[in-house]
Length: 226
Length: 287
Image 1 (tube, each protein chain N blue to C red):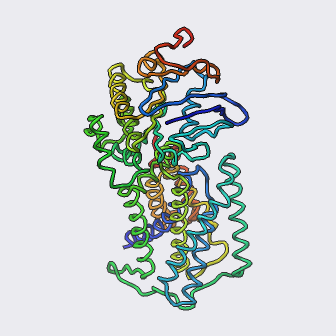
Image 2 (cartoon, helix red, strand yellow):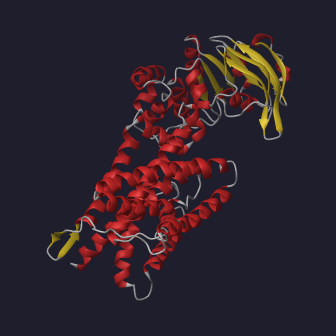
């Protein structure tokens, strides 16, 4: 479903990640691990369309994404749960979800929202509350819910557990598991790399922007991960 | 009776300020650019209002034509001036905007003459007595009704429609808005159109109230609208509307009671300085 070949990207003249190659099937899960500054977020943001690659290919279901804008990629099935959640704090929970479903016809809105509330019932109780007043865990759920509204085939999750209580982290992993069962592919970055590797079937290790190792999570060289 | 009269004058002036400041605050919210050339659109609106009314005899047609043309010119200003400068420091866009504003004053002088234009047969000059001893012209009533109608309409759109919610999300975080499927460029075009059309409407109404439109009529609104969006809290639409009304009323009372010490614009800026000393972030911006 997702194919990445020889991907190099960065900021201005600086190249942050070099020659990244991997494939991900429908419902597949990939843990992206590496130390700080290894290029994990850069790789996710280049798939989401916020960083234009210097070279290489990014294809989703056979469609070349390289020259597509982020909003077009969202319509093609790329969902993003960014680092720090980045929900819209001055909008209500309901409005955040409306924004999440903007790429889909408005008559699908109620159905998509019902699906989100089924996975995260707490969001239904907070529907009319300003998103900025939610707890950290609820904000993470909302970030997931917002991404789910666009019915993604591929979900990019950056720093899932950052700043969250362990019980909330478990809740988020459970929700992510439900999405994977529905056939959504996931690329996951988490500061708790063990949790990410345990959750995902495959792992890609980045080291200062280079692809150090890629394979089944069960065979991941744990000592290399920091 | 003087009190009511001053309140009404303040509300009328505040309504005009609000129509002008809305576009400026929308542009600042979306692009973080101070769109000084917005005041040139206000002047353009005034000219179109006078010319179309004198040519067709219909003030309504003039108002609608002005809003449409000025809206389109505003969208073009985004494409031609600001879009190529978005990746540069905001100071460059500000300097470009000031340059366009000065150049536009000279263009108005070249095309329409230095002495301004007037309505050959000024419309809406009838008077209505709203309180005993307080009369208002139809034109002054229309300013307030128009401002309330247009601003409430935009407020309703922003709260109750998907496009409106998307526009608010784009102001908060354009990158995440794009990742949610929102076409950020379309939101920018739409905001430039609405903000510019409202400035055009304000230009038509001011040209009617003064029965005069001249090349420099945008000079005072250019800096007064900047003061208003700073006063309201940069990027806060609600703040800009409250500041517009507050400034209109302060100016109206100030001109009568302290006018012998400070002129109208000095009163406005003294008020701005006093508010910023207490609330540096502006009236309705977050602390």
